[in-house]
Structures are given as C-alpha cells and as structure tokens.
Amino acid sequence: MMVTTTTTMIRAAILLSNRRKALSLSSSKIDRLHPQWSCRHLHGLTRKQLRFCRRNIEQMDSIRAGAQLAYSECQYQFQQRRWNCSLINPNTKEVYGDMILNRGTREAAFVHAISSAGIAYRITRDCSKGLIDKCGCDLSALKRTDQFNWNGCSDNVRYGVAVSRAFVDAAERGKNQSLERKIMNLHNNNAGRQVLELNTRKQCKCHGLSGSCEMKTCWKSMPTFR
Image 1 (cartoon, rainbow, N blue to C red):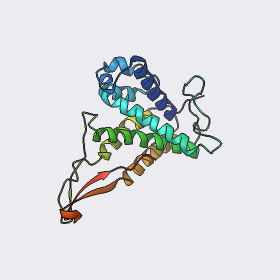
Image 2 (cartoon, one colour):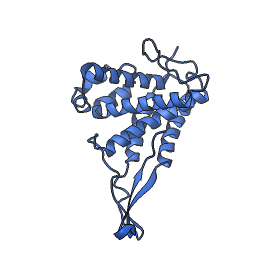
Image 3 (cartoon, rainbow, N blue to C red):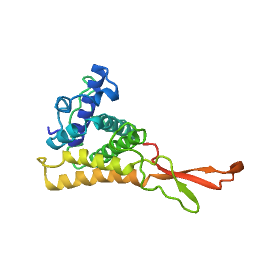
C-alpha cells in the first residue's frame, strides 16, 4: 500500500517529536543540532523536503507542531464519522497508510488542506512570538490613516503560507503519481492556506481620555485554529 504524502508528513512530524522527547531537548537546543544528522533521521521525507530541512532546521520544530495541530483538528472534526481521521496505530503509535487517503476522496482533500493550513498557522504564530530567526511581525501594513494607526505585531501570515508551500508542496514534486492526482493535491494544499489568509482579521485597541477612542492602534491577527 502506498503511504500518502500527508501521512508521510505526519510521520516525520511525530518522529521529530519523539526525538525531542528522547533527548529531552528544548526548542532552542534542537535548533543547534547538525542539520544533516537531524534531517536524515526523519524517514519518509522527499528529496526536496530533506533539502528544505537542512536549510531550515530551526523551523522544523514549528512544522512538526503544525502537523500535529492539523492531525488533532482532523480527529476533532471527524470524531462522529465512520472514519475518524485514524492515521496512527493506537498500539504502536506508528503512522500508516489508509485506503481512504490513497483515493481522491473528500476526506483526503480535507486532510491535505488541514495539514497545509496547520503548518502555515504554526509557523505564523511562532514568527509573531519571535521563535524563528528568519521572520518576525508583518510590517507591510504599518501606516497611519485618519481613523487608526497600524501598529503592534501583525501575524506574518504571508511568511507562514510561503513556508507551508515550500515544505508541503515539495512532497508532490517528482512523486510517482498521476498528473491529475498531483494537481488535485496541490490544489487542496493551497485551499487550506487560502482559508487561513481569508480568516485573518483586523484587531484594534482604543487610545484616548476616558475611553474616547480618539486614536486606534490596529494589527492583523489570525483566529484560533478551530
């Protein structure tokens, strides 16, 4: 049975998570691991994903967390369904392929979309928290209008989406599958990221005497993942 791209990605995420637990590593320490030594232990990644891992080892912990976030949300959304997003063997904790995900089903489409969105979401969150050196707050909206002043730390959704596209979509490149399946998977990956972008909202805080709100400071923020 061919293991799907998405289950392969989740396997890599869990392997990285288990490795952290085994070595009792904090996020700051895993950043200092040698990239070639660390990445080659994440079995199941494609060649392009391994290249991404070696060049961006400090982001792999966020990618792992994003994939796990997506898996938890998938289980929540499908908990009352016949298929409850069961991707992990409860006895061995290993990720295994599922016939549902090896076909062009709506469940497979959802898993691709939610996985892509989960990684983009976590990368964006960690950027805003200053946990990733290569990115930070989104400064593109910093400007002043008559009504409010763009300020604060806007969530850098564009960076999170770019990282998700580079890592998740790389799994489809050069893969032994039909062109139609590849296009479908890439479409579903992109759909998940688009939902994240479209749900980013403006949040504001009032400034002025006695709550008069003479000036508002605003920033862009993502909602909760659920």
